[in-house]
Image (cartoon, rainbow, N blue to C red):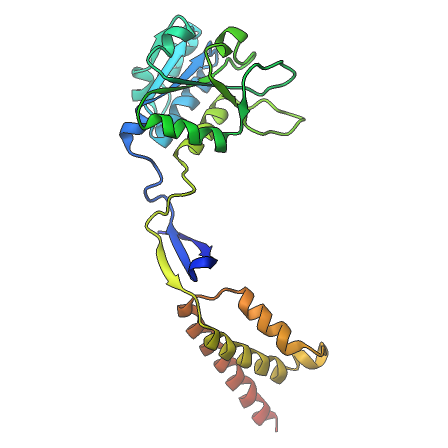
Length: 270
């Protein structure tokens, strides 16, 4: 499994975080979120929403006045049949969010005069996660063409807007849902079983610096680029690498081998 490297300077270690290992909160919390689509019309978009929910572990899909033929066609969406089969249909937004203590709308803003606070997804989802610990919350998405109506917005406590370019501010419905749901499961403060690796000591870095300077001198590199503070520059360069302790041994071995090879070559030329 691939890993990502995250540096924690204050701890003097490098944390290797495994990909795709435990990023999703407990299922009981996810089950409390209701994804509510208001007047959706495109079956491909409904299917894309259901698939995004399946990707990120959400199950409760509710549709308010969906276009009937589109909803029936969307039920065949690959990878999300169970979510679509269990999706609830409601006649009004009030009915769809009746069991929720927090209702969040989504908007592209445009030129509308909004009467709600508007938050970016990464900030708004933190508040939603806090609510899901103890009660239900709803995330509302409007129709593909018009978004949420003023009546639908009146049921919301506040709004989320995904930052987009001014030239094309409106996102596809399935994409917008996927972005919001990903932000909900992404917890930047949670360390996921990180394997802590100690950084190389100053003594080890000095050895590497010395060998690197010797290699640069032997190869003629420093003759071609003469500077008065070469030693200091190389020392700073090595420290910027933030080498783990285990990698320092490899660097020392590589530099020694290169020096030996270069010196052997000089003997042969002589």
